[in-house]
Length: 138
Ligand code: CMP
Image (cartoon, rainbow, N blue to C red; front, side, top):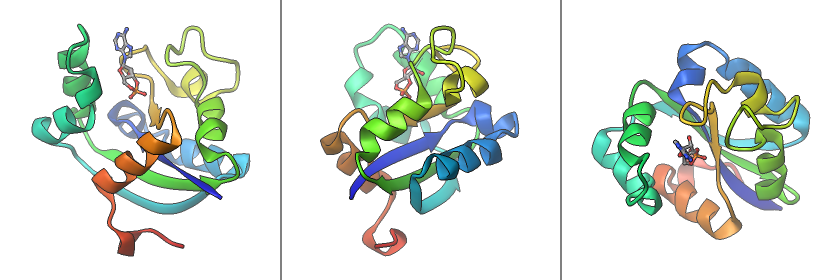
């Protein structure tokens, strides 16, 4: 079993589609083994997205991700990282696959509804950023 990290972004929570996204994750066969809602501070968001610090869109990214509550999750499954990336679809909703979460619920590349880890190593770092051992079901 592999683990990945998922974040349902503020635009999806504000637009009241977080329940639909959670249902899609479960129906896709990924198991939710940890979940909570919180609002990131700008400092926390800068730390979480540190890899994008030099990108032109960094400030906009931080403003968007701190605009409201997010739902963070740990997902488990065979090949969970790639499986969730395929469920999310391409980063830009305009070019995301039909039926993918970003196609269905994303508004723009800046407000693309969900984030998922890009590889297993990143997943473990992102999981540890938000969850302690006691909060994750084994
Ligand atoms: P996410 O998976 O959360 O990882 C970083 C985020 O930066 C990404 O989703 C997008 O929301 C955002 N992003 C990526 N590329 C661009 C871009 N070219 N312009 C604006 N935002 C972007």
